[in-house]
Length: 160
Image (cartoon, rainbow, N blue to C red):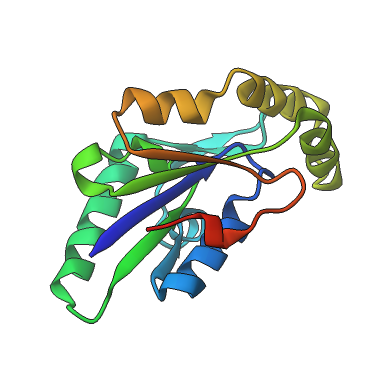
């Protein structure tokens, strides 16, 4: 069974890419945000940043357990893990990390459309400029594909 992580700054196209990959390859699509809510994986709430606080070690333990359960089911070909935190999973559990990127001007428009606060927009734009998700995936020694979603993306360019 293959494990593909789709990561990137919010509004760069992670969910769109994850859904398309899951459909194309007939893999399970796993939305980490939904799991955080359903299984109460948040450690708290940061009021200033208006976001849930996630302990990545606790999240990784949960994801590793989920992956192990799926591996027991021989009918499941693979899983796409959709989250800006998915690249924190240890390399031994992941076949590929897809990092979504977007032009800063377009990303700014997308974040404003989501009604993010100016501080949150600034924080996310800086994270994109400094290539945070890609750098962290690289530090984790993952096999990485970087895709630019600014003007859409042909999913057929990603080979699993």
